[in-house]
Image (cartoon, rainbow, N blue to C red; front, side):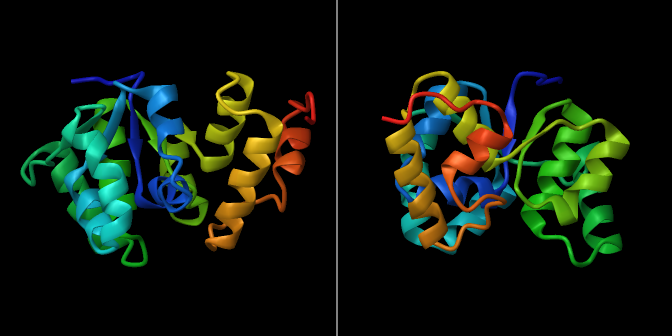
Length: 179
């Protein structure tokens, strides 16, 4: 199976949008091409209110929930990654392994853990920043709303590489109307 247009979301990207109650942005941009793996779902369940904000999209089938087969290529790769890279999280390992064998896009912010592996296996990465910029470029959000969402993400201790939405837009050359 190949899923070139599908995005497999890691817990950190999901949390960025769920914490600020704007997971709808991901749904608007990517559904029905959104995948959450069972390992990531298990991580989300640890913060029940975040899981509840996302689970409604799983139940409505806007998100595809996939259970990884531990004996599949990606399942075996997941265990290898967890064994060899013991600092990597379960969600990152599962998503990377799945994307490697299914040619999906990896939705993650955790470059320290994923970048080398993704480069080695040609896995495309999409971050919270890129998702926000895409939402702005597709006019799902305007500058004011994007700035408020950004501030809320920062307030919720989401690690973003820019202090403001303006800086992100400026760096990506997408500045537009500031109203």
